[in-house]
Amino acid sequence: MALLKRPDGDVYYELSGSGSPVLLIQGVGVTGEGWRPQIQTLEKSFQPLTFDNRGIGRSTSCHEPVTIEAMAEDARALMDAAGWESAHVVGHSMGGVIAQQLALDVPKRIRSLSLLCTFARGKDAARVTPWVLWMTLRTRLGTRRMRRNAFLHMLFPPDYLRSVDRDKLAAEVAGIVGRDLAYSPPVLMKQVQALSRHDASGRLGQLVGIPAMVVSARHDPVALPRYGRQLAQLIPGATFEEMPSSSHGVIIQEAAELNRRLENFFRSAESARG
Image (tube, rainbow, N blue to C red):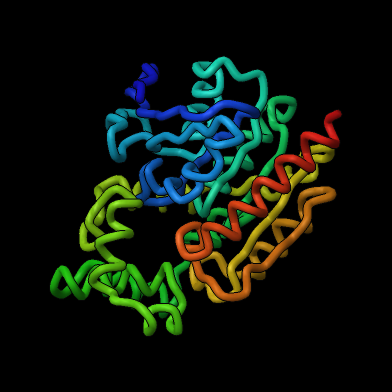
């Protein structure tokens, strides 16, 4: 546990394990604790670093505008703080967009890119559709139990939710994402706005030579699989995989399978590096 002093605030991070470095970047409204299902496996063979994006969790609020570029710079500074020359970089949702920007900023420091349930263009994440408006209202209105249930519907497919105790699941997920699912932190909308302003899709061809794996979830209503396919097509040599039984919360619902794929991908990239 440590705080990285930045010019406009402090970034909280945790480093564990040993082995090849792995930097994990979370999405909108989620702290670094959201990677707990991955850390429990990865720290046995790798050295994972997780952190709270600026303005959320134990990272302090900053006075500068929240931008994807600034969060990517925070990630680069964390690599320096850890003494890493390079690392495997994993990003989920908004974290995947930050990971892309980091790779564009410092391509020689990226051993591999794993982009989970994410987008090539930030405005696709911030799109306004009837479903998005409805779900946004459901997560902000009604009883706390109703708001938690609405949040679960963004993370898990209906068939899965019908098979579990939703109150128990909401409590478990709250412990992972770092907050009560009925609560929306103030920085959340700033992060969404940062996404809406960011579009580096025209530059992704510059990532040639970086092993990249794009993973989508078939039932994801946030990062639609077609966005994942588009992203994979824009990064030279990237592979695309679709998890057939999960939704946006794939890192929780199918942690074991996802962890297996990540470990195999990291080792494949290490082998290619020689």
